[in-house]
Amino acid sequence: MKKRILFASIMLCAAFAVVLSDGNKKFHDDLSGYNIAPTLSTGASGEFSAQISKDETQISYELSYSGLNGAATQAHIYLGRTATNGGVIAFLCTNLGNGPAGTPACPPSPGTVTGTLTASSVIGPILQGINPGEFAELVRAIRAGATYADVHTVNLPAGEIRAQIDSAKGRKDEE
Image (cartoon, rainbow, N blue to C red; front, side):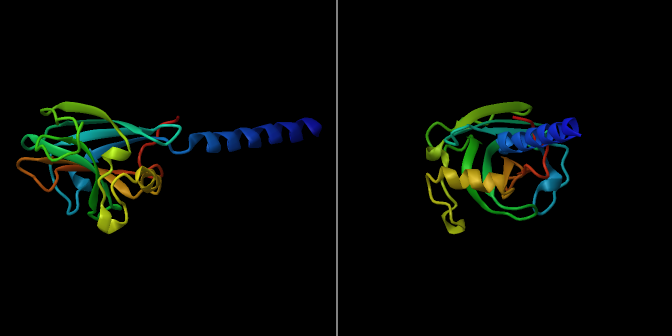
């Protein structure tokens, strides 16, 4: 009987430790035109991965895409839930010269861009309650499943592919 109680206690502690250590720090989601609002049929696809640093002061990311309908012009993280559009929080890449200093260029398709977001990367959206530099708000929004990554192209300037950044619904990697 004592062994069962000990075993159950160990298993409960282990499960609790996994929950605490996870912290939803690493995300991986697939981009598709079917996630665009309104929905778009396209042969393009992509992947977005992000990892929040342990001290929550930066997010490293990788964005890959292929089959785009024209050259990529820019990609962002937005504040918005599934099937809604929101404002830009941070640039992932741009070829339009409109991002904050240090924003990488969007590579030709197929392409991959990597980078690191910090407080200086956060540009808003002010009308949705996030002021420039409010990195903690970006982290909170990601953890709440209230952000999405989007890639814009020359032929589809409103966005061609999108992924909801959502630890509960997207594919979440282990830390």
